[in-house]
Length: 251
Image (cartoon, rainbow, N blue to C red; front, side):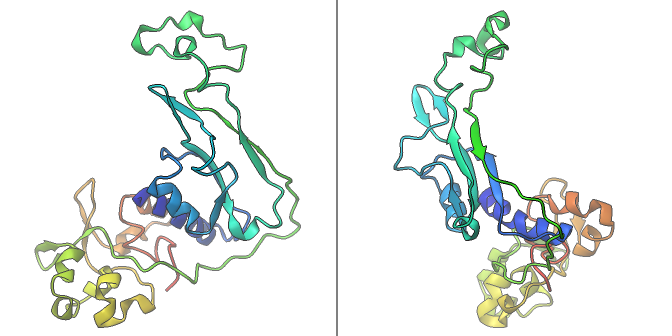
C-alpha cells in the first residue's frame, strides 16, 4: 500500500521537478501485486485505468506453483482515456513455458538448454505489448507545482526535545500535543481537527529520524543541495515529511 501511494505521488513530484505536466501518463511494469490486492485497487482508485483486464478476467502474466495470476500492468490516466489510442495485451511467451527451458541456473538447471534465439522463457514474467500513437509537441507543456494533495502525516519519528515521538503519540492527545511547536506540520492529518493543518501543505519543521541510517535531519538539509534532492526525497518517509521540498505539493 505504501509503495502504491508513493508511485501515485511520484507523478506530480516529477511534474514539479521537470516543469512538464500532462494527463498522458503511463505506469507500466511489474507491480508485484495481484489484480484484486490493495496496491492495485489503490492505483485504480486514484485516477488510473488498466489497459489489461481486471481481476474478473482470465488475464495472467506469471505462474507460481501451478497457479496463474497477473503481476504486470499498464495503467494510464483515466482523464486521458477518452482521447487515447493506447492498447495493451499480454504476450504469453514465458509463464506458459516449462521452467526446464529457463534462462537462469536456479536449482541446478543446465544453462545450455536455454535457447536465446527464440522468444520463450527469457523471463519468469510475460511481457506487456503496448501500442500507442505518439505526436510531436511544438511547445513544452507548462506545469506548476501540484495544487491539490492528499493530507498525510509524516511516517518518520520526530524529535520533541530529546525524545523521539511519532504521530501516534500526537494522536493520543491531539488537543494538547498538536499545540506544541511544529507538531501540526509534522502530523497535519492527526492535528487537522485541532489546528486545521490540512488546509495548507508544508514541510515539517521538526527534526526527524531517517529510517535506514537513523541520522537526525531536517527538511532544510534535504533541500540543501539541488543535485541531491531527488535521491534524498527517495528515502522512505521523506516525501511525506518534506512535502514542499520534495515536490509533493506547493506551499
